[in-house]
Amino acid sequence: NAGVTQTPKFQVLKTGQSMTLQCAQDMNHNSMYWYRQDPGMGLRLIYYSASEGTTDKGEVPNGYNVSRLNKREFSLRLESAAPSQTSVYFCASSITGGGYEQYFGPGTRLTVT
Amino acid sequence: GNSVTQMEGPVTLSEEAFLTINCTYTATGYPSLFWYVQYPGEGLQLLLKATKADDKGSNKGFEATYRKETTSFHLEKGSVQVSDSAVYFCALSDNDYKLSFGAGTTVTVRA
Image 1 (cartoon, each protein chain N blue to C red):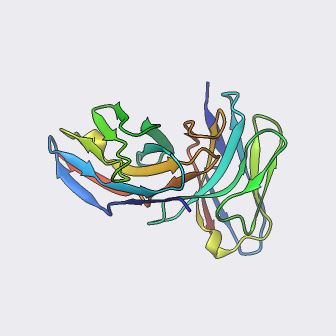
Image 2 (cartoon, rainbow over the protein chains, first blue to last red):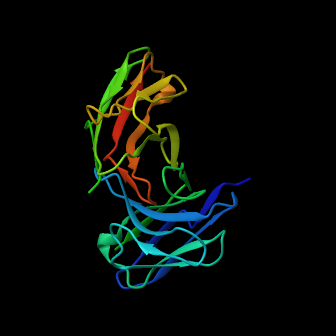
């Protein structure tokens, strides 16, 4: 039981390049989330998927797109990376919303130069 | 909207010292409250939670009580160890899909 896995662990992009961050969970959870973590700001929700087939914007969605590929996988895409997107990105999953614990992946450290 | 305010760090303590990290919240409903911990180089892990007023969450010697009257959820541990060095996040969920996090408090415990 791997929990929540993310790839890659590290990535360096040039401004304007695109990339997709991958996330998968093996806990049969319905809900999945993408956060970014910046110093002194805690974690901020980018997008979430309440259930397979649905996605919704979080607090900071601009510059990102997501795909809920199936119940297990939820990817985050940066179409044209900007230095402001330098951050650590975490994927999480939960049984559902409404106060249930979220389980986090190990994170992807992204640097945009 | 919902928000969480937690004490700023960093906090540096000696082993066996008492740890308190203050957390207060603003929410429109009756949220669930959480403390998450992030060890160096890792993702966040749930440390404890409380889902209604006066509930006490506890785990690994840490405790926090949901105080509705003071809108607080302070984290305490009576005797810290070096292995408790981490970043601690207070968070709330207001019966939807969103967790609102505090900024995090870095705790360093020295032997």
